[in-house]
Amino acid sequence: MKLILPVLIAVAAPTAMAALSARIEVGNMQFEVTDLTPDDNIAARHEVFGIVGSYASVQVKQDGGSDTAHVLDQRSVSFSLDKPWGWGYSEVTAPPDRFRVVAEGTAGKSGSVLGGVNVHTFGQIAYVLGPYTAVTVTSDYLLEMHADKVLGASRDEVVSGYLYSFLDTFEAAAYANPEFGSNDVRLSGQLLATFMNDSNRVVVVDHIFASEFDARPAALIPEPTTGGMFAAGLGLLGLWTQRRKR
Image (cartoon, rainbow, N blue to C red; front, side, top):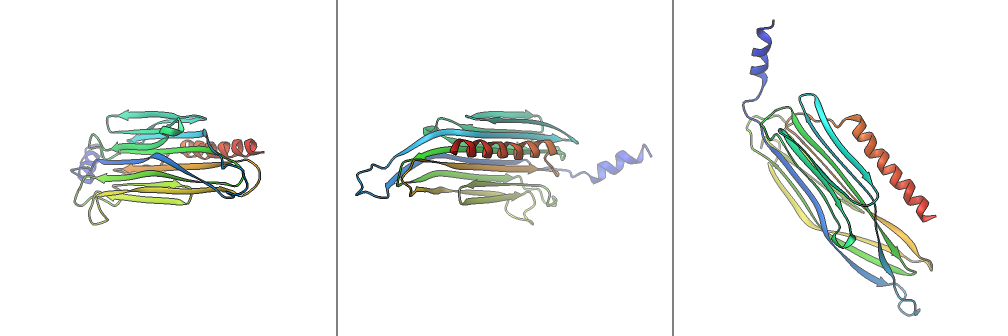
């Protein structure tokens, strides 16, 4: 039995593995302010309060084990996690005039079938709106997913990701095996969000950006602690936001 097992493993393993890479980015934020009541002699007012929350999580996994780094912060955060079989990078940057959200990484650097990368990135920016003021926020976005072509690769050899901002959600996936879909996907354009205050008091509104990608030459399931901490982080930010608004 000891002699047969290594032979079975060698037969089952693919001869080539794909490198999978992803990049999700938001930046170049611009603001257009509108006075909803131009004849009332009250000037429109808009201020960027600042980044009130950010969260970054990077997980690199191989051979049944994983290394995870995560940060829940009230300003900004950036870090990377690098292993021979994969690396991930997560960033939320302040100040607002250079605000950007980045999730990036590569899995299968060493050709290992059992490597994978999962990256969460979350940023929350707050705006102060004066009475009867609206602001339209635009920002550039990019989603790039790439998988090296490997004929005969399983459907699990895929990199997939999404980007969420206000009412916009974008998703993309790239497959090593062209039988299941494209191996090279690039989505880019402009995000658009409008926030309006039609009251006679000052209000604070929140603009959330969230992205995640999962690159897995073999199935990568985020550790329960990682997902739990991500959900807990979002919950804490929500509570903090509600208290600040009261």
